[in-house]
Image (cartoon, rainbow, N blue to C red; front, side, top):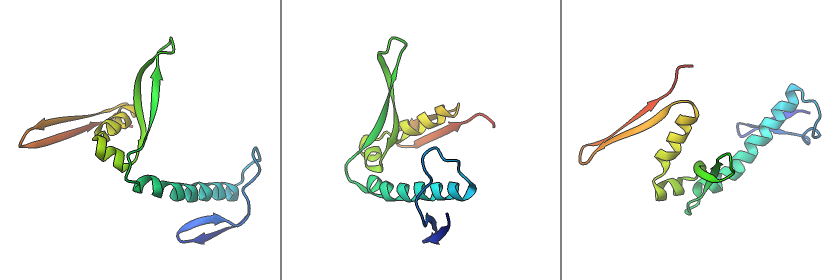
Length: 119
């Protein structure tokens, strides 16, 4: 399998390897190129639509009752319309073992503090 560069992205010149086949470095490059092409193709409409859209993960307790939820992904329209960009960012920070907090003073402004553990 060979790759050819087109518009700063690699594109496989033949089909991807069969499911379950061992992948060599050229095959991996082809897979990553296909993923990038797919991401670009489907990300643009998602990011540019006027309607708010999000993906939510529902969290369950041991008895399988819904106890919480978290935003997995949201487009810019959803973040702007719902003002949940901070909540999504805080979920990301907490997922990395940290936190994101905000302190606001009316008429003065807001201070955002991102705390992450050392690597």
